[in-house]
Amino acid sequence: MIVAGAGLAGLRAARDLADAGVAVTVLEARDRVGGRGYSVSLGGRTVELGGSWFTPEHDQVGAELARYGMSFRDYPPVRSARWLTAGELRLGAPVPWHELAALEAALARVRDDAERVAAGNQTLAALSAADYVDQLQPSDALRDFLLGWWQLMGGASPQHGAASDALDAIHQHGGLTGLLTCLAHGPLPGWSALAEAMARDVVDLRLGTAVKTVEHGDAGVVCTTDAGELIEAGALVLAVPLNCLPGIGFEPALPPRVAEAAGANAGRAVKVLMLVRGVDPHGIAVGIGPGLNWLYADTAEDGCVLVTGFGWQDDRFDAATRGHVERALRAFHPDAELVNWAQHDWIADPASRGTWLTAPAGRIDLVSPDRFDPVGRIAFAGSDMARQHAGWFEGALVSGAAAAAHVLR
Image (cartoon, rainbow, N blue to C red; front, side):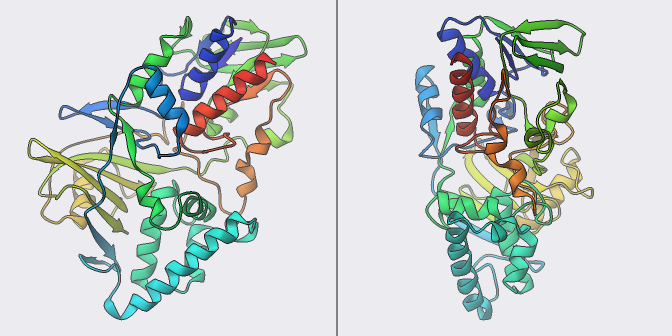
């Protein structure tokens, strides 16, 4: 068997197949395993350039960590919040006091709409986040507050991402506060360490080997790598991000339900890890800033606090430029001193072409998991295609297990 992609989905599929006595070859375009789980060291700390958290209901992640004897950390409750709304930094309410009633009404509407989407209201779900917020007729401050919170679950600009991402998350995590409390745990040694442990159970792992074409039929599959090597197998688990599918040629072509979805992930987020002085730990900062819109201040060590910042793709903000990162940080924390920072451009990365799964506004059907049922001897896997917990590492693991089970059948 061939598994294309050595993220958590591909590694889970490969290990399950190997455990069943199947010979597996894993082909990975990158020079490392882990996919969009990518841990690095920043100032002596292990930080996550890709996904960070898992939630209390993510059983498969917990099982994998236990299998490899790895512990996880619990993130402490948030102790403080500040807001950048209507161009003003606010340390109390996110809107002026005379707008508190409008804030309360908007949050009640969002909560109710989350239940409507869960009940099947596709028209509401398909609205862009920007159009959805505009329907609430918010003030400038209220709009910035709501769109800043959109950043937490939506990996695209509010004009391009569907409101369903945030509304679904509110429903799935028990209400509005669940958007924050669900970010409860993280693997102590890092996601890369978990991926590397899983990879040790794979005998034939080939890094720096991308799949360029796939011929498939009743007799099996033939994959051609970027180096021109032909590899034959009885079946293929295709565990690459959705936005990488257009870079692979298929003969015969994939059915329209899959081909139309290729490249449809709207996720275009920016993430920056910052070591900072002058910021209190265990706080959030939310609003519309110059490049970043949602910041979380973690624990303090050696006089520095680790701040994780999220924004959406913006040509005016370069996360690799110190001045841009400092300006974005100080918009929320004017007295902060940036000591060091790290980031990875997932949008330009040819092995990802985007960030976590975000449904495109107006076409949320393009990322429906129903599109990714197996095609002959090809089974799809990955958090982008997962039937459960899509966009999370839990979804990657669940989908990898399902793809392996299909291949074994």
